[in-house]
Length: 423
Image (cartoon, rainbow, N blue to C red; front, side):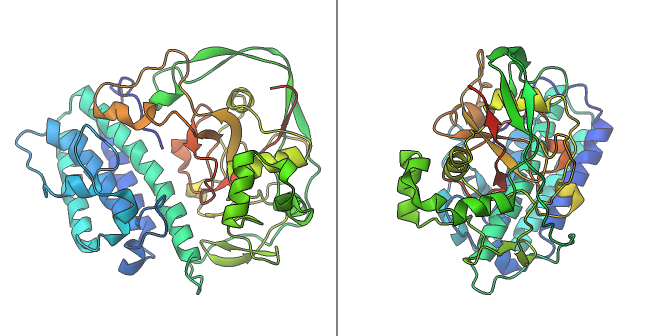
């Protein structure tokens, strides 16, 4: 996930920033409260990280980029932590192998908690002393970085718990009875024209959302809601995973080599799914989630449609309020929303795959130094997702936000919204 630009943060009130710093850090701590120490150490696959590593890495970010360069007389909490908890900043130094993060039984969870407390105190002191705008910009960036890891912590944890044959729960989840009535899929028409996309203004954005620029769009239509579990189940029952003509070549190879025949957390009977609250009956009308780009693209072809481009998605979403089922709602699972003919669920519930490659906008230039590494060097071989999910903090999302993953990724809360017309 991306880091962002530093130039737009100097106007933030340091008092408000200090409050948000405390709130954001406290939320991360609260997210691991239901976990045992054993839950926080194990890594279920190379793409996922242990909860303890997320706690330490987000702390290392503040130490590395704020306290180290900008707090007078600061000395590292532990000089070894830079090697252990650096993610992929080449200019910062060597790092522990990503696939081996689950082998780090030491430092212990309690030592990582102490590390967090120490760095939190240091950042609070920096803000209390009246930080330079460049420093408050880095702290702002660190908070958005931590919000990304709050989501990753939960998606990584879900994958870990699902690997356990006992299928333990993260915690009990609230939720309504499964909805069985699926509204007919309608399409929102958008005329041909020249539109502007990308972020502008003084509010925070990641650098990959800029610069704002013009795009030409042919007439298109965007589905008024995400694809439901019921509709995706029809695809599965119709042999969608057995029909090579529906799949991109790499996707078909992946289906065969990985043995895919349904979404990752669905049971074989196609009537139940694993959630952070344990096994649950599949809600027919809720958005399907945890599907890869390959699966989303194959479904769209089966349905006689296509995935939207990210520009098409943004042009429509920019006219809608940023409202939806986010981490703040505490459902931690996609939910059905009956709305009649209105556009719905563009934000929250599930990230929506687009057909757009993750590439730089015209005129994009990465930031100088280590911060610039996070985005620019990943702009290849990945696809863009939009809109946020049920485990994205609400204050973290906006219409211009660009998420990105490889087309094989299934463990994120990713779903499908269809489009029609010539892209």
